[in-house]
Image (spheres, rainbow, N blue to C red):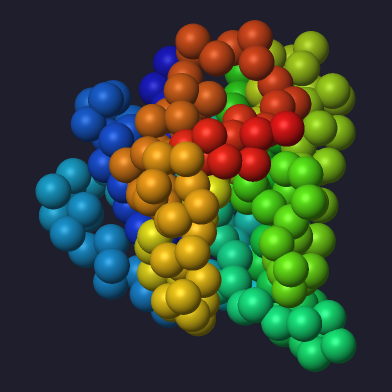
Length: 245
């Protein structure tokens, strides 16, 4: 079977590292790569893997644009794998300063678009009796989260419960649905996080550092692989020993 990977948030540091890993491993794979206003970040990969990456510039915070994207996906090879990565950068804020407008936007990006895209890809996966769906969560959902992260944790928690629900419903169709939950990962995603918080997280980690995409991508690739065919509904911590519950 020729694999087609739909990756939302593909322009992120993790998304680009995952694309490289998948295309290096499978010379016949095709990637449908969604970004938002930054698809030029995919240009080096598109050049290195000519004809094997199809970029799409879609604002996932707009439900109507997501609907249009789902219609466009119907004209593409049916995804056998769906990886959902997008989120607004973490903002540490006390609950009394909870930004409801920003939360609503992040909810659309992380959760509502995940629902719509799953609805778009699952029918074909069901017919094929094969599929892999993977969400990126956070170690903040494992046990007690850090202070001042309510908005971020709520959205990630919803993805975790969506994962479990879909896993139960679609297991009999040969479809697995899982999450990876990294601890703090040093990427552009932390651009709005104070350096002191980033440094403190590294110091508190049993390995003495924060995660990198190179730590997380192999775990993602495993859950997307045939070797993980009997693993579904799980959240795999990738934390260097931190936040294990």
